[in-house]
Structures are given as C-alpha cells and as structure tokens.
Amino acid sequence: MKRLTYVTLSILIITSGSCTLALEDFSVSLEPKWQNLEHDQQKSKEFGGKWILVGSITFEKKSKELVSLDKINLHWNGTDIDNLIGSLYKKYPDKEFIPIEDNLICDGSWNKTKQTLILKFTERLTLGPITTFYLVLTVPETTELMLKNGSFCLEEQCLPEPFKPYARKRQLSLSVNTTGQNTKKSAH
Figure: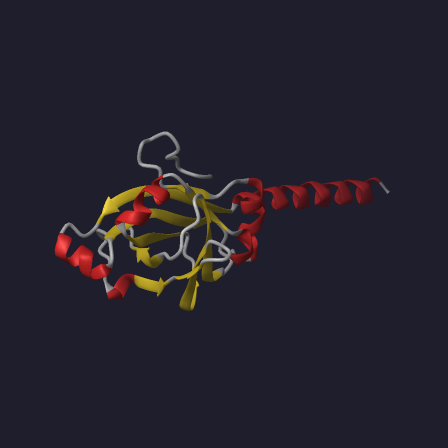
C-alpha cells in the first residue's frame, strides 16, 4: 500500500511539473522597430507611402514538438484606418534583413470593419526553436501619425495551440509610438 501511494504521489509530482514546463516552452515576443526602408521619395510615391519596418514577431519554442503557423492577425488599437497595406517577411538570424521576394511570407489584407491586418501565409510554415518575422507597412503621410499613436495586438485565435496559453497570460501588443512613451517590447 505504501509503495502504491508513493508511486501515485511521484506520478502526480512529475505530471504537474511537466505541465508547468510545457507552458514555459512556448513564447511570443513583439518588438517595435519603425525603420524607413525606402529613402527614395520618388519610389515612396510609387508605393503610395513610406516603406516602414514596423516591428518583429518572434516565436520561441523549447519543445521538440512540431508546430506550424499559417496566419497572423494583428488587431489595430487606435484611430480607425481606412486601408493599410502590409507584408510579412521571415528574418533569418545569420543574415541582414532585406525585404525581398525570397524572404516574403505573405502580403496582408486589411479588414476595415474589424480594423485587423490579416496575414494569411501562402503555405504553412513549421516553426523552429526561434522564428522571427518582420512586419513591413506601406505608410502614407496621412496614416503615419495615426500609426505612431496606436498599437497592434496579436490575436490569440490565429496562434498554434501550444502558444495560446502564453498569449492568454500576456498582452501581445506592438506599439509603434516612436516618441518613446509607449514603445516597449512585449512579452517574454
């Protein structure tokens, strides 16, 4: 009887420890950048605005579990925006970021009613131990101030299941305020 109790207690301790570790195995961080990628004003006019690297979204996983992603939704919190053009690129850790076709994951679509930038991948992407994406927006002068005074929130429902508990416990937001007052790295 004592052995059975000991074995049962040991299993409970091991199991509860594993659950805690699993929650810490998956994290997401968002970091603002606000970097103008196109300094040629003529090209900016052709694109319909400045080409701005707004920030990064980094997924980290310690688990060997295969996890893939096929969509990122970014809900806008700020003054309503009529239209927003954005693209998502993969950032390779050993290379300088260049917004070229080889690094492009997808172009986004703007849902004006929901004020959400929907980044639907052309194909599912398996996440590595650390996977970083860069969000690039085409920012017209009329929209720039609005963007600098608001933030994007990563919507939990588009995340893979293992990342959802992490998202529920943290506000995963990307503040693009360049005055320094609201600019912060979100969550880890």
